[in-house]
Image (cartoon, rainbow over all chains, first blue to last red; front, side, top):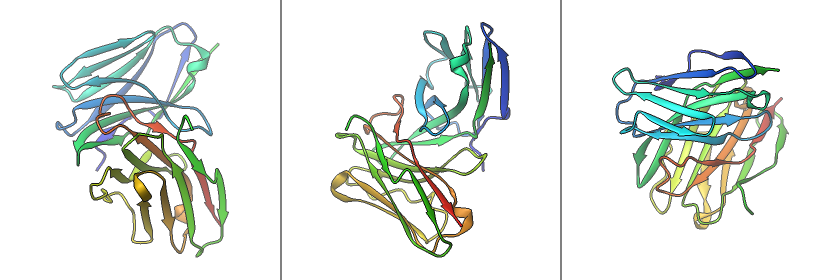
Amino acid sequence: DQQVKQNSPSLSVQEGRISILNCDYTNSMFDYFLWYKKYPAEGPTFLISISSIKDKNEDGRFTVFLNKSAKHLSLHIVPSQPGDSAVYFCAASAPRSGGFKTIFGAGTRLFVKA
Amino acid sequence: GAGVSQSPSNKVTEKGKDVELRCDPISGHTALYWYRQSLGQGLEFLIYFQGNSAPDKSGLPSDRFSAERTGGSVSTLTIQRTQQEDSAVYLCASSFSSAGGYGYTFGSGTRLTVV
């Protein structure tokens, strides 16, 4: 049962253009949604998050949009840079046992072409 | 150290042998998580430790897998009688307990290859 789904395994974008990475979820109990970035041979790095009570969060070139009615979120990167080429994981977090448990999607590999 | 440290970084083992993977979380982080990433797959949750609470073991794929966290700090993931399907990158992460929106800090992982 995939609670967090990233249906596009890869995305290719020209440098300077917008990258849009999409994610769908099924569990309405998630209260935070997060994006992580992963380079080869490294662990994932936290990028940006959004609370379930918000619909947008922006941090520099990165903006996350949340559509709760559609159970959908997206990460926009603008302008895209070659260094953004990595695997991006969508994740959703729910409180559990005094902390938080996070479920990850399968990832989308972003290629930014110079 | 400043980050999450995992050892070894690479491990090749023969099918049927036991392996131990180690994770040193960030000092002060009360929550510790193990995930694994098989080739071409996403991150699969394995186990979660939070303070003195009983660990959430719901992601462990079989009873060959176990984990412990000693003194609320270092954690060891043990895989007994390894199988080829256990081959994956095993990732450890830590966080503050209230880190729902702040994310985890991951280590670089242990790449396990069972031959």
